[in-house]
Length: 488
Image (cartoon, rainbow, N blue to C red; front, side):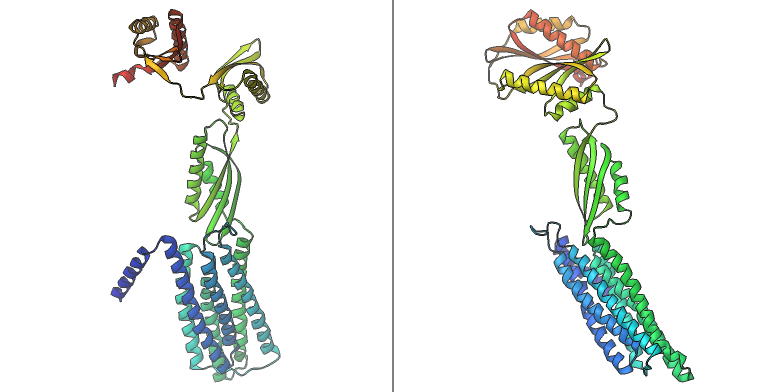
């Protein structure tokens, strides 16, 4: 027996390896649904035959219950086939809702079963007496039904849990409760048989009473299934999942707040739509990384999920006036730099640089800057005045004519650098001629502990001193380096 089980597992493994995961999922779901249909056909036929031969309402109610289970199993089989189809232009969320609708139909069928069983049981209890003939075949069929229901409910539940299929879960739930209802019918038949032996007429009423017990089980199952299917059809969020997603997403670095979380389910797939607040001054690349992190944590909460994350810019609690100015500029799709804020007699005055396309006319550039200054003052009303230095942003690649070897200029630059106590040395001096203009660039080593503000001041002073010493220079670019960098 152990060898047979091992052989079967090896065969399953070979089959699984020949399909993609999605194809193997569809194959496994369809196979278990088809097996359920074949088992339902056999059980239903046997119960009807024995029910008619014995006259047992308990067995007849079970036969009718099984016949509706057969219909439900057929519906499930077809719904599983349809629900696994990929999304298309007309069904953009896929076809998973078919499984939920299938489970809803099963609920209606079960409730119809209950109406007939209760009606017939009340009639036999109070208005009409029916002769019951318990037989060995009746007991054999009911025991066979229990064995089959146990086998297929376990198979259905295993695949349903594996792929989170609500249609298969509904079938598995049906057949688990069928085990209990069949057991109740067997007890009813035993009591009728005992009543015949003892002459106790009250025990002969056990059959319709057992039928009522079956109806009670069916109502309980129907109610549980109805709640699940209605919740799924009305897009109710699974209990506790929304709170779990919020807790996980709030822990993602960069997320300031969560504005909205919406969850819907179609079959075994979830769709999550979430809006998160991010600092408005983060770069596009940084916001994209936060979105990817949020998506990853939601995938840890739910297995099969399609996530849409909307990033909403928000003012962070730690923003200073410089951050607010930059945020207002970014809102106008402009970048400002070299921002200087002075407090003069209690009034804040701002000076800043902005680069605009070099192909703009002066009047067009001035209009854009004026609009920018108005936006900044609306966003930061404590600012009294703004002065903006307009720079041209290159729109073309400049072609250099030649590299100029100017030893005298290089020595002059190094000697000027030596006059600053912060400067360790000046190296990699390059002189270029571009459009009849001279450009000079160099690397300047400074002490490691210098604050960046002082580094900037030294760079500016070096540029000014060098231009004064060599007026023919058009532009000077200085790249600062720490002392430790030169020791590597």
